Amino acid sequence: MRKIQNILFLALVGFLLSSCVTARKVNYMQEPDRYIPSYADTLSFEDYVLRIGDRLYVYVYSTDENVQKMYNAGGANSAQMRQQMGNGALGGSYDLYTYLIDEEGNIDFPTIGKIYVQGMTTRDMKHKLEEELGTLLKEIPGYSTISVEVNIVNRSFSIIGAQSGRYMINKEKMTIFEALALAGDLGEFNSRKEIKLVREKNGVTTIKTFDARSKDLVNSEYYYIEPNDIIYIRQIPGYSFGINHVTTAIGVTAATISFGVFIYSIVQTGINHVNKYYGKQSSSSTEGGAQ
Figure 1 (cartoon, rainbow, N blue to C red):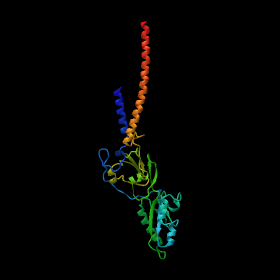
Figure 2 (cartoon, rainbow, N blue to C red):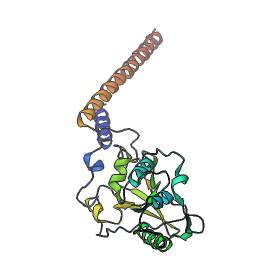
Figure 3 (cartoon, rainbow, N blue to C red):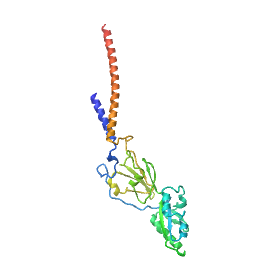
Figure 4 (cartoon, one colour):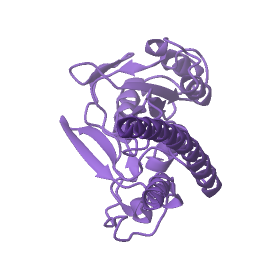
């Protein structure tokens, strides 16, 4: 019986230790080794290419107030408008201040009409609009050089599996770590080992898998996210509950052992009573037969 108790105790301790959430499982920027992969230096960032369905905020700068009023809805300056769009102050009024790229890849810009912008970067579109407006407005007396600012609005990425939700991209370049921080990090029981990134580009959907714990991630193709990316994070297998501190493990072990001893004593007492009862019955039968 003592041997069985020791085996059960060791099994319990092993189970509890395997449930511990160690720093190795949750820390970022760790050195690659046999468990944490090393990534090749493939870091690259490509300017976002405009797609059908994107919404664009365009602000036209000019020393001519009439020109500014003609092209800039709302009368606010560019910084104010971008701030209101970023914090959701415009609600569902995006269409009043932005240009939607339609199914044919065009936007409908005042006084110019349809302009094909699909496949351009915002920099390309800026130069095209400045050229178009310059040609259109050069006959105006006192005309000065036009400058155009183009921003993509309502850019977002999504996370599923942990801290699920849709989050706004509020800067030109957003890294995977900034994206996870924006979502409130991953928590203790979500896997950093096999994060999946679903990305659509040029009509092709790809799924990339990487380990967010690796220090080499900052030099890899996985470092930057793009608008409409989907990040899938799964729970660590078997971690419906976990222990994140040694003292907690000791406490749980002691409590479990105490409970086990308590149950064992009750069962053993019952067995003793049963054995005693049947022992008496057997003794009485023997005595009766002898008489």
